[in-house]
Image: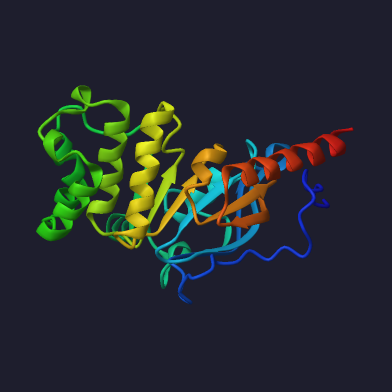
Length: 271
């Protein structure tokens, strides 16, 4: 069966790249990554041979319409879902070759993940939530790194508070700190400001931006918000499970213009 046409017309030829200034060895790389759900008439190709790199100590936003594959890409790259074919690498580690136990160890040691819904344990304090993954792995936080991360959250005076005693933005900063506490090679953030008001969202995005600039962290964020994407060094756009375009040093206006152009092209295909 021939592949359906892209709903958007990508700039040709499109070759996904690392952001300017990124090191030669990327923090993560997908090569011809494919993810198929279902079989027969119900088969859906969520990722269609995606090749993309995420440079170290860079902030990348991934955008696209609903069903474009952006969350599936993140889940496959974070080891939360297994690809059907192709390669997903974190540093030099090939995720597709690992057993479930090995994959769990890689997620614990090399990957941080920030969920839209915070996913904090209500009975634990902010500090206990931040350090929980390390304690589950039988590791102690590095004191100097822990102090650095806590200082970056701006929540040093709220560490003994439980999630119910914190605002939504503060809870999400705790969740980001939890992802950073193990010093992962890469942090994936799935719509991290989706449940926040604009002010709280700005605080969280500023924290992610600071983690890249001041802590040398690598961040990949799925978002639908042009304002959020403007905090990134680079935006990768997906459509129909394939990369179709990218922007470097994006502004919210440039991202919005690109998204509107995509929608106009999609409307022409629909007609």
